[in-house]
Length: 477
Image (cartoon, rainbow, N blue to C red; front, top):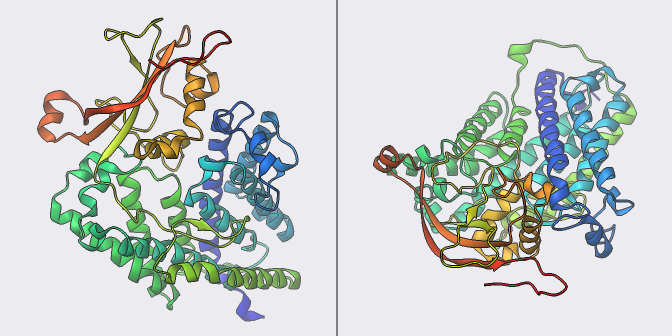
């Protein structure tokens, strides 16, 4: 079947696979370094407790069969090693079926993590990585030319990512229709980056241009992905440029980088790379690719219905394997930035004169003089959830109490997620949380004070709290 293969896209496949392997590596390393405090045996939302009421059919995972912190760490680090080897091109030197199995193992390992990760893994880029990773299983290696069907499925995925994000904006916050959302977004986004302050202070007309360009790139350009070359390559290039702009303006884990990888799979690099003879694919491979294509198309009806619905859902998986999902981001943009600031004291009895020491986070705003850092594509899960906690205590109810308890214990794994421990010698006796309103400073304030932020105290978020004992109940002052 000559129509089955697209040998001119051999370099597109190589670039895409290397980029995907790099993002898998980031995801597995992040899981290995953060899981103990978040979902470990003594974590805020422990996996053993979760799998007791989440059946295998709803959350398929190898951790349904067995869980221990050591086993989870082995799986996460194994995923990181396998990803690093793929990044180095190891799969291209193996038989086709072995390379496919390698990609499938990565997908299964990360699916197992996501399906027990609970709220810490409830982000659209988790499903996007899994859906992309599933398609990568059928993309093959140097033992066969890239299959046309999988290349089209990657474009179909990219279309849903971009078009879904465009629709949710147009249907959502009226500031997107008025082109004014970016007056606020750079300041109120979950985790600003080192350039976000500068993006925020761009002239108002340029913010309107940003918003209009976003609508063009997400609602019109994706349609061009299905046109002949070189138009499809040009459309993919525009998406790459837009995503790089987003990379510079904030921290969105690997969402932008994975979107870039998908866009690069649609670029025809044949003019740069030249011919690269590849063997004809075996029959069994063709059958598997066709079967996978039929499955994806069959499962696409619910995401399509969601796209067409006036009640479009944002970032939803319709099956426990995360095979075909719906995507969207920032249908609503906040006008005000709230931050929960956590403090502790080692005084035995809190008084009005008590000195409280603040816990610093790695990514989320805290110290007003600290320039926001760049972390993406690495994902700081606790920092992101703290942004939601500031919006409403309901978002934090399942885990915030456990977080405070671990601070009162000076729990080593929890403190590793923070920038520093203000109580290195002994745990604090009390911990409290306060809600602040944060805004970027202007140029004059920055020059005179050196502060990137200014903040105003709003109210108590959690009163001073200490650990309970057998004799003394948990006390709030």
